[in-house]
Image 1 (cartoon, rainbow, N blue to C red):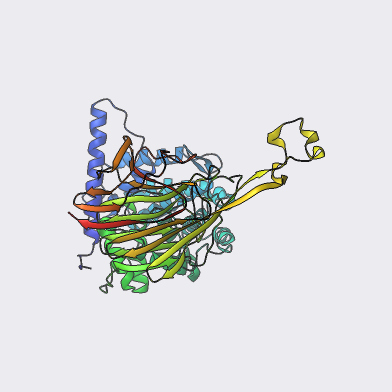
Image 2 (image 1 turned 90 degrees about the horizontal axis):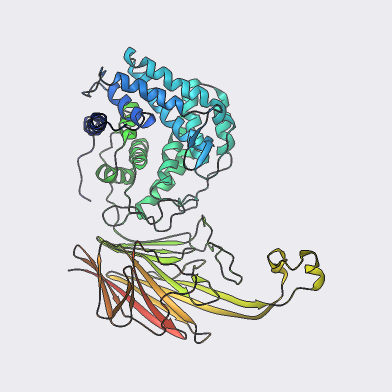
Length: 558
């Protein structure tokens, strides 16, 4: 990895000045054109307060910002409900977790203002304190509804503890912390959100560790940040293909929470790996106001140590080995996959520009990227009692570079229920105790997919030989920005082609993925209950059991 110049306080100040200058210019244009600008609130305060308090900034104690700061404080306080909570208006109403996210940032801004010792910021500082005081009952009694909210709540409580010194904040934080951290041995959180909520956990638990002197919180941060070295695709975007949250399938860099967390932990631990990851965030992360805030609050901890450890770009790493997730295997079909298959097996493979992810407990079992050419997913679907996309419970290691996924799908029919079991329901089938029906004609469809990881691609072997004449389909989903070509491609519609014979090539800016070869053993465009994504390029290949075929994915530069 090439050594890059480190960020400095001055470089971060300059970046935020540019952001504020653009923001103010846009606001002035809207006012001049008679367009009502967006109300000022926490977002504008986060941009303005650090620059107003930073002596190196051209906005230091700027009189032009004073009325905007006052308006921003008024807007922030207006969002607060009588409970002390705020609402995430399109989702979470009267929400303690969203109040915790907000209170954490408000507390950071309060500390920036307080440490500046500027008389000109005291009114804003008082308004920020008022928000935190009003939020106290919300933070001390409010609950959560996702796993990461516990650590966000704890981080907000830790910051309030630093400001107010009230032991009630610490007691409440430890009610969450005493549940124990939901990390696997590999460092993966329940929500598996590599692009968003990993960073949220890291930045809030860092504050927990520092404010409460709680080393287990810092150990949790270390484990996850260490894992992330294996979660970067070419171009340093994050592996999101198996996320349990809204970053699923998104092309995103590490966010500014990662920027801050890697810098702080690199300084704390003198860890060369964290230094290298922090350098990547300096080049790729969207540097929001949080970056400048932390440079101001932690002036000795944000600069990076000199030691750097080159990041691996050739490895095969397996997470969650031997873990078996619960996936739909039987009829009647039991519904969607678990949203958070905690610890489900993942294999990450890098060979320079080639990046592959194998995923258990997901409908898409493989992600493949070569440079800028991205196949977002490879899926096996079966014409088997409406199961559609098949999810596999685990991944088994066959050799150093070969891995298998197996499942035996069950299909059956059901006998009548006894008369006395249904008499009370007046013939309403949906109210019957249908799960008590005795099964008939039970049968099983074994499926195996074997992945062999190569320097220049992947071989995918599909096997199913127990029952003849079962329809199968493989689905490859590509980034719509590239071009999919092949003589054997039959375009079904704008977003769906079938590869009936020969090879197909997907290309984007000179990077290519070649798929060999097509199959058209049945005529169904999709398997029943399977839904294609209209926003992506989809290519399908059709098989009929007994099946033993190897699909070859090869990558190259044009």
